[in-house]
Image (cartoon, rainbow, N blue to C red; front, side, top):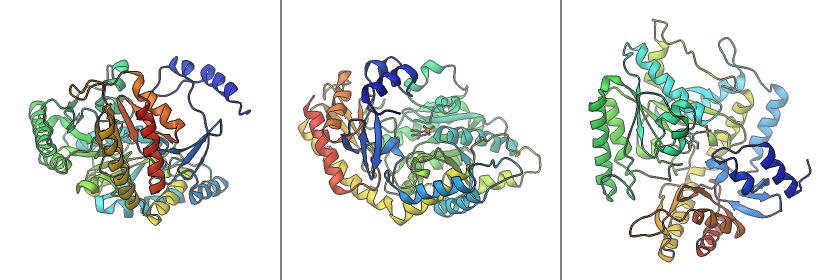
Length: 451
Ligand code: PMP
C-alpha cells in the first residue's frame, strides 16, 4: 500500500465510514492518518510525531511498544490462533487468564469471568446476565435498567438504551423499553443548580431512590454506572456517590453493574474505579486496556454471590444463551495475560495518579489564562476534561469550530487531544512521564491561544 497522503485520504473518503462521524464530514475534512506508534508517541503519514494525549481511545495504557504483549500475541498465533470456548471446549490461555483476573479483581469481590470482544459486548453481557439472575431467583418481573444521564455504555441496543446522551440514542430509537435515567453528579451543570459535590451527590441519590419508588423496586434488574463518567465528559462523582448507589441497590435487591471499560486497570490511579470508591459491584464490565488495545477483547467480571446463584441453580434457568464467537479468543487471552503482568510490574496505577495530578493542575492553571475554559474536571488519575464555553457567566456552549480548532492547533504543537462535544478530553497512556505531561500542556496552551 503506497503511503502517499493524498492517495490515502482520497481512498479513505471513497471507501469507508468512520464511527461517530457524519459520513460527509470525513470527506470534507480528511482525518489525520496515523502510521506509527512508539512509547506514548504516534506518527502520522507526514512523519509528524506527537504525544498521544488520547491513549488510543482510553485503551493503550502501556503505550505502543509493549514488547511482552506483542511477543505473546505472536507466539499464540503460532501455537493456536483460534478456538471457541462454547460449551464443550476451552483453551489453556483463557484458563490461565481467568485465574489472573480472579486474583487481580479479588479485592473487588469478583471471581468469575465471562469473555467478550469489547466494551459494548461487555455491557450487553452484564445487562443480559442481570435479567437472567433475577429469573433464576424467581423474580422474573425485574427487567428494567436504571442509569445516569451523561453515562456512556457503548452502542449495542442495550448499551444505547442505558446511555445518557441523546447523540447516541435519537437516530436509533425506539430503544429497549424500561430503561430510565437519573441525573449525573455533574457539578458544573445539573438540574438542581448545586455546585457543592457532596450536596449534589445526595440530591442525585435521592433522585435514584425516588425513581426506584416510582418504578417499583421489584421491576428493576440493575443499575449501571461508570465509577468516573468518561465519554460523557469526565465527570468524577463525589466520594459518597457510588457507595450511596451501592447501598440503595443492595437495599432494593437491584444489581449494581460497574461499567469499567475505561476505569479498570489503573486509569483512575486505583486498580479499578470500584476500588477507588470502596464499592463491590455485582458485575464489572471491562475491555479496552485489558489487552492494551492490541486485540479486541473484554471480560465481564462476576461477583461470587451472583456466580453461586447461577452455579447452584437446579431449575435449568441458569443455562447461558449468550456468548460471542470471539469469547475467550486464545490470542486475546494471551495478550491479556501479558498485559496484566506488565500493568502490575510497571505499577501503572501509581504513575497514573502522579502524572494525572500534574496534568490536572496544569489544565487548571490554563483556566486562569483562557476565558474559553468553563470547567476543568479530573483529579482521579489520567482522565481529565476541559469544558469549553463561549461565555463563562452563562456557560453557553462554545462556537462550533472552537474545540476542533484547539485540537488541530494542539496537534501541530505536539499533542493529540480528543474533542467530545464541548470538551477537550485527555486520557494518555499510563506510562506517561512528567516531560510528556509538559508537552501536552504546552500544546494545549498553543491550541487555546489560537481561539
Ligand atoms: N462503556 C464505556 C464506559 C466506554 O467508555 C465504552 C467505549 N468508550 C464502551 C462501554 C464501549 O466499548 P467499545 O467501544 O469497546 O464497544
